[in-house]
Length: 278
Ligand SMILES: O=C(O)C(=O)C[C@]1(C(=O)O)C=C[C@@H](O)C=C1
Image 1 (cartoon, protein in one colour):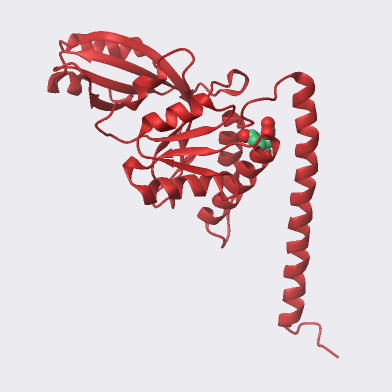
Image 2 (cartoon, helix red, strand yellow):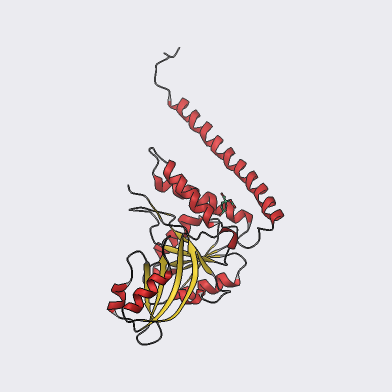
């Protein structure tokens, strides 16, 4: 007979693990059934079609996941599991592919795509942003991943035409030191008006008379990617504005520093970046 306070046997603990694994699996199957019903509701409301990716909802889910997590299991693992769950349930609602610009460096971009969208969603590599943007534009509901890092090609000017894809999200949803898929990436797709998050608004701004002075005049609240424009002294800017700020503030600062504004166009928006401090 086992003593009541005797430590549990390995077999007992493994039986507990089997019980939990089966419960988690059943919960995932239950989630599938809910997704089935969600698709029917979306269909009846006429809100399905194109991409099933809902960036506002996903940003909110990822933030809450990170906030409630504690314990031994690394946050990286929990986040990656949920990314695969959500991205795959997006895929089963409406198949899509993820097109990625590998020019920024293949390993980092591939890691980002796989971390955020898993392995069921097809991954389509491109060498350069224009191929990504064209593929997304030609698709019904594909997503494109473009680097939110400084480069020499102002890919965002291709998002200016009204019918061109727009920025709908920025990854990772939750930033922290040593994130396993840390490359900052913009997600582009056909605009999804019913589900867009407008916390951070993103603008393409073309400037003439670009100078170091103009660069220094950029307000600190704006996050700006700068690339040379075709014109000799020109620059193409991708300006991300946090809530509570207006693009007019940036244009005024640039003009005050002697730069000319040749064009300005909204090219999308995304959820505010949620930062976690370890
Ligand atoms: O909430 C929705 O609209 C869903 O489609 C469900 C779901 C999910 O699996 O939780 C999937 C895709 C969306 O991007 C957001 C969330």
